[in-house]
Image (cartoon, rainbow, N blue to C red):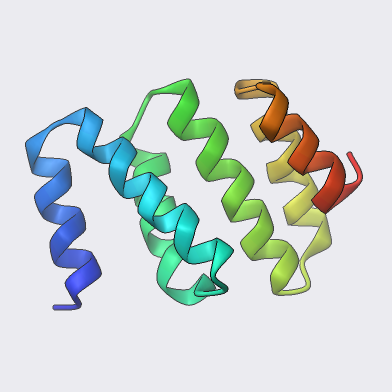
Length: 101
């Protein structure tokens, strides 16, 4: 089992606040260009968490993954979703910068 999957399983089993931490870890992986490692974690957090913060941030970073893979349509869809769910200034500004939306 990959270490990231083991860590994720442990975090999810502990508490929602740790889910946020794991979402943060996967966001950092995207920022470092580790899209293949980050994507499954982001999708899992998106599926498990009901938090607007988690939903918005995971959607944004999955949008960056899609954009990085050449799927601009999916990236834009996810960026718009992120801005709708969690419209905090830094996220809105990053959506403008990265996606021009």
